[in-house]
Figure 1 (cartoon, one colour):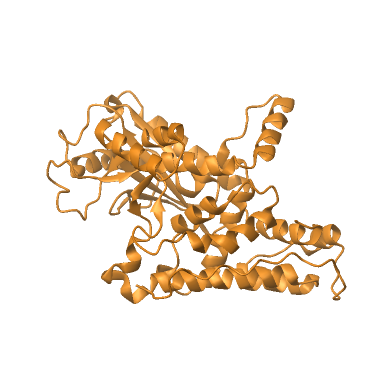
Figure 2 (cartoon, rainbow, N blue to C red):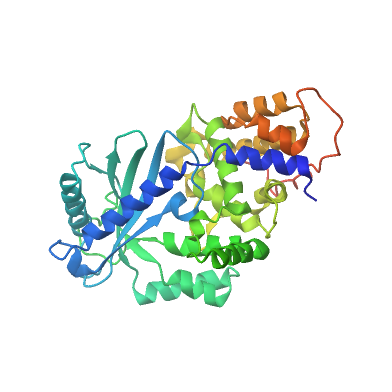
Amino acid sequence: MSNRTTKAITEELVASIEIPETAWERASKRYEDLGAWFNRPDGPCAQFNPHIYPQGSFRLGTVIRSDEYDLDVGCRLQKDIRKQTHTQKQLKLLIGGDVEAYRSARGIKENLEEMHRCWRLPYAGALAFHMDVVPSIPEDTFGRRIIAERVRMAGTDEALADTVASWAGSITDNRLPNYAIISNDWRISNSEGYALWFESRMKLAEALVESLRLAAKAAHVEPLPTSQWNLPLQKSVKLLKRHRDVMFQDNPDAKPISIIITTLAAATYEGELELDDAMSRILTEMGTLVRATRPRVPNPVNPAEDFADKWADPKYKHLNLEQNFWDWFEQAQSDFRALWSARDIDLIAEQANERFAARMNTDRLRDTTGLSTATISAPKVRKLTEAPARPWRSIS
């Protein structure tokens, strides 16, 4: 059971790494403005029914405070462009041309940059952003049917499997040999389907979801978008990502990627209503969901895709990606045990700063826990149980 002390420590820690409200507001305005731009009647993409939507951590509600925010935006042209009519290069240049026109029209001084799968548009200012615009088209009916079947076979409810598969799309990648030729072989992406799967895991906390609904009804306002629910699963992912970022701040290319952490945490979560209970379960069990054979960490909305595919790729051997994942996971277990066991305000603040680069509000923490700067006796803290041994020990 969660107790007052561990709950207060964990909630105060996550509060210290939350993004400012201005970041949410600016991010929303950015993609809404871009959506209006792409849909202007005289625009080159308007005839293809463009759909602009947030992706990644802003869509999932797992963004953490940073010096620069990465706003991932999908740009899907929904009609009259198919794999049989356009190359990936043609689609990417079409969308890139409109993003460049947007940059010029909005007076953005930073140059547009082409990435492998997207166009990157930086924004300078007191609150720095860069917007990654990912071009795509809807996946064809046959491809969506295959994905839905794979998702069902992986154990997902049939209705949810059909829903997430309906959002599958084909994206561009200029590293592919068929990038500039007509081909049916495009990379598949499904960020919106993934977000819906993630939401289905959040909604296991039924009592909290219902309280959000009732609060909105009582206030006579529109319900918050799921990205701003800030439920225990979202908070847990934020804490894990922040710990990872601090641990690998001197070697960011070698850190465990966010999609692996997010997927394992969400798959482990069982609807805990308190954040420290959710974190305890996730830190105890998420490692057991890493498979011994490929796909090691399957994409829940396209199980044939392995989020951990780089672990065994010779090109990335020098980064020790799998070993780094396990080292980070074990360090996170250790650091949360230490944080939850501390009974001195100064020690808690010191550990939060060292392991999470977080400045705790010690006055508020003192008020909510009753702890002081001198070590005092306290109720026994529920600690993490020992995580089960990995079913394998060798690092591929």
